[in-house]
Image (cartoon, rainbow, N blue to C red; front, top):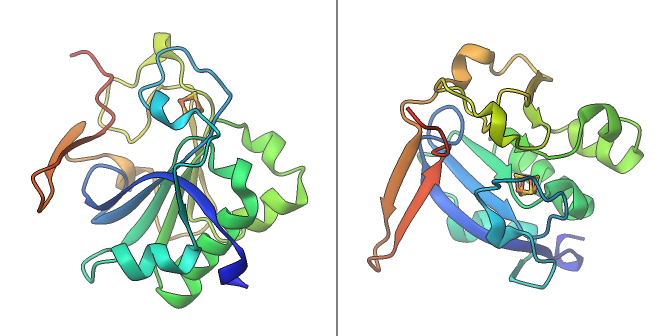
Length: 188
Ligand code: SF4
């Protein structure tokens, strides 16, 4: 079944310390039409195909042994619910990873739709809500703006685990590519 599913992915960070607790594999889905003003990932908005992956290939290619969990962001992950569900199931059932998902959609809306609820069954922590530039998060909590809410669906984490070491992380790849990640839209 996995081979029938393709996920349109913007980018993958194999190792991050600022996108949730511990060492995390971070996957940014491609495609979002929510138009949050000040969105710091506007390259994910287009619905054109970017990088197409079978869910299993993501883990086979990018999962390191020292990874505690997967963080899925975007773009809007729930717009590719079938791929999201497959990715989350694999993360939990095949690799024993914790799962954190960021969505611009409200949880109240998500829980009314069956295929979204199926995804939620495999999520430890959901962070919902659109980014609001006027409400930038000023602490080290792992969210862009203070209107976004945390939902803890399992006892794997609690809010204290969502305070990051830093707002930003600079990663240098083996090929010399430099990637900046985190929640650095905050002015101190
Ligand atoms: S939901 Fe996320 S990706 Fe979409 S516009 Fe808002 S901040 Fe950007």
